[in-house]
Amino acid sequence: MQQKNRTILIHGLHQTAWIMRPLAKRLQAQGLDTHQYGYRSMRDGIQTNSERLNKWLEQHHHPDQPIDLVGHSLGGLIIRDFVYHYPQWQIGRCVTLGTPHIGSICADYIWRLTPAMVGKSYVDALDGTVAPLPEHITLGIIAGNRPYGLGQVFLQYHNRKLRKAGNPLLDEHLVHDGTVYLKETQLEAATDHLIMPVSHTGMLVDNDVAKQTGYFLQHGQFKR
Image (cartoon, rainbow, N blue to C red; front, side):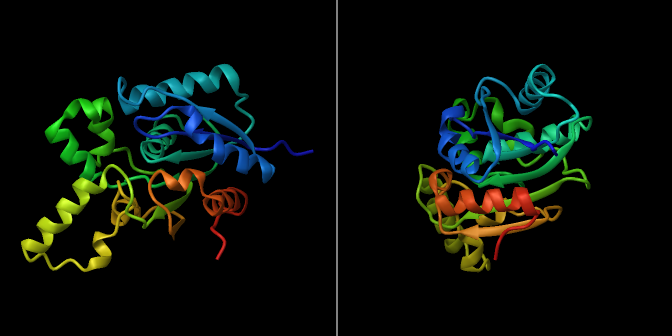
């Protein structure tokens, strides 16, 4: 009997592992074996957190069993850094949820105003300089287009500034999920990209997001 991939769920900035529990329960209902991995998103930088994930796997996971990875927001960038620096692990498929793959304008504003609010997660991660995605990694991206969340204040201000300056960007380039712009979630090296009617945090408790996440992990593409 073939052993199941283990699915590691990685939360985002200012969160803990429990925030991924609703998604974990829905993935378990689809037959997936999940683990909610917790890390210190403020105190430690992305490379430290990748290293700690590697050490946790060395202690709790057999290297012959493939792993799937699901990351929300900053958690998706940790996945990027991890699969780049620790190629010894057998990676099945990866899904990122609302992850700013090319950097976060919202984080830029917060970094300039109160850098303590993003801590060490900005450098080499939210600033858009995370490690490139290795060619062999199968990555599915889910992005939201409902602008509800704490970051919408910064993004609404940014949108007004762009329009006032006569920026020729179309309205579709100004769509965001309340924290991350839709355009920031895009990555050329990704296998698939899906836009869903959810907000940045709301996607974690959305049943359809869970179904699409599970579908990609099992089939390598989103269901359309």
